[in-house]
Image (cartoon, rainbow, N blue to C red; front, top):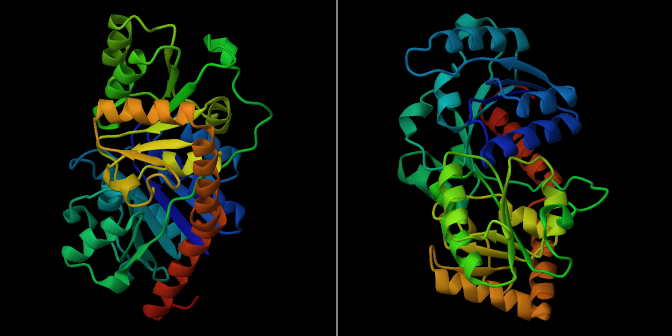
Length: 354
């Protein structure tokens, strides 16, 4: 199948990681993939190294007619069966099929990872959502059930030679090490995580990510005088190696429509503590495959961390159950199969030859 994947995207973020992972996974599964995206020093080289053709466009604001014009030409040349858009800007800039294009009909499929305004999806034929709640949101706003499919994100588990060396960051061999991953943004509640970690003597924290809150978080770490125990690692491409060096994954966001981090922790066999943000609360089962706490509840967060450090049997149970959830629901193979089956189903429904 010929699939054009389209993302505008921020500099860094979870959706952007998922986009690259999915493009490469579909390419490796034998699909003919091309990509349209903004220039980015991380995403673009990784896609091209995988052997995928990448077209670069600006994806500007409402004044940007260039992106729409060139996108139309890319589509006419590539002749896709499916154009899959990620988030609102890509969907808004991607033209729907028309007979004037002079090419076989394609279908626009929008992958939604958030509660976006539907005015940006006028050219969308079908939708994929990454949580059940997002599917319900679309249906409440008039999208018919047969036009929407919930398909889970998958957690890419890259092969690693060795974990990140804890000693390189001043972490003693037997000290508990927490790991947070994500954009340095208020939605991730890293300020709360830092405040709680600072109170627990002997516990270390790595936060891997980049974003607008870096200066504020650095100032907080300095004010609490915990720079020896809490490190901002910047944006990293060695997720598995970070997990394997850590003892507990902290995914305690204030806002999170899905959040692949908890799935990555299951895949990497690291116990996870999550918040009741929209995404994790739909999947993580408290005391079964993770510990779930209320958003910004510092007392509950500290208690959950201490509990996992002290109760090794609990940590083992959460890891075992979480890994089974990963194998059953969140592997790369299951996700790719789900997308390809939906593509085929929608083309049959539209009487398009497959």
